[in-house]
Image (cartoon, rainbow, N blue to C red; front, side):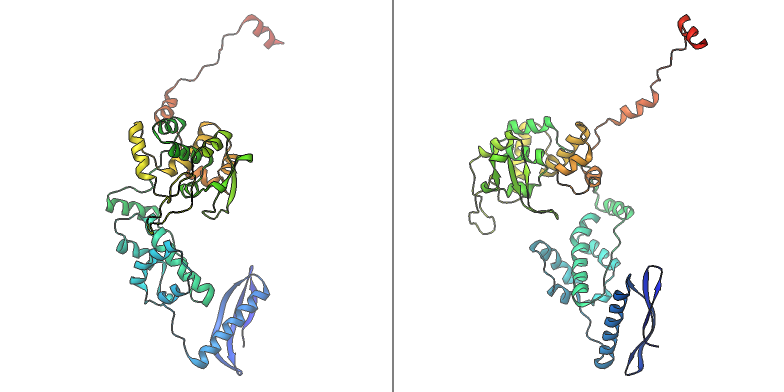
Length: 364
């Protein structure tokens, strides 16, 4: 019986045999097509039939390896760098032989001192992207990897002697003012801009003079983290501060050439670090990097300290889902000891003494 489709719940399944010239060559099948429409199920049958007939006539094609998959993957420079050590280990393996457990097991081999979050970000994610891109283009096996669980994370933290996912300390107005008091105008404006707008450091340092629109108090920030390029509104005071900064042309550290003029004068998202550490030391405040000073400080300031509703704060900070910043960027600032003390505090007892007037009203 040739392949036929039938509905099972919401999904169409296929049963029967793939036939060639009236003779069965593959099967029997009783398999989900993963299609919710009849047309999609028939497309699956057509593809499966074509593949099995080709295999019957010319034999099995050589399996594509991870190295083959990389050749058809359009990797960014950052991802390409991450893939180099991975391909050295599994480059010659067929894609069908690579499992999620195998990818997760590369972490201890390639980065034994890193956290599971780093393993996931720099090993599992880019390798999975390569494999699934080949699946989209060539029909090779798809891969899904189960994330590291908390027990794996804790065990790795214990092995490397360092805790991961340490809660960030967000900046507040006192820290910002102390920082700005010890900083030069460029870094003072930079930290104020990120604290006020929740801009990421790479977005901030990439701002050029043409990205300022003084008439409307707007600044253009580049696309990042899946969000498109957009114009954000700043306070008039912030715009005045930005306009007062003579643009600087930073030097590209790799080529040595001068870059286009930039408002804050930095050429990369890491160039500020050393300078900020010096400023914090001079101001007598703990060092905070750009992310807790900016995005963490922004959301905690609005939601926790000023009581702005999370939806409004998330929209102002360009988060598409308010649940994300509430989970990551909002930091509680209540002293735990004060919370515990509430259980030992005597409640105010109601006044049970009744006056003659109250007795009379009760009778009435």
